[in-house]
Length: 109
Image (cartoon, rainbow, N blue to C red):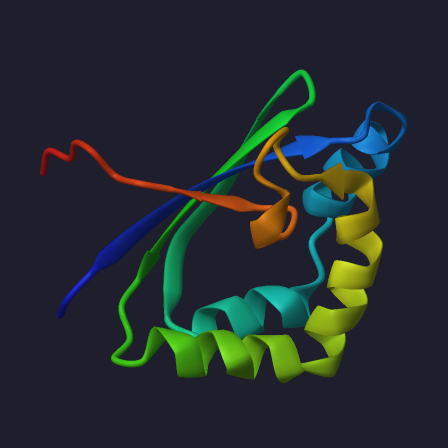
């Protein structure tokens, strides 16, 4: 099995930080199921102050198709409608949406 690792960074709006944390403390089961159906594993989000870092591993064969499948899911769309307004892009990186993908420069198994 091939594993591709992804890291991304974002920023929380200070007035929405607690809501975002609470949403993820009680993530919707159907959202978690869809993440797994789309071949993502070891998905984690870390937070310090208003900065978010996400990490996940992709194990599928067609990343774009799996991401399109996730984006088309009604429950996932509703989840994003709750989460995305709590966030803003990292300063200077607004072209990618609220999450800015990071380039992996080191990995050790």
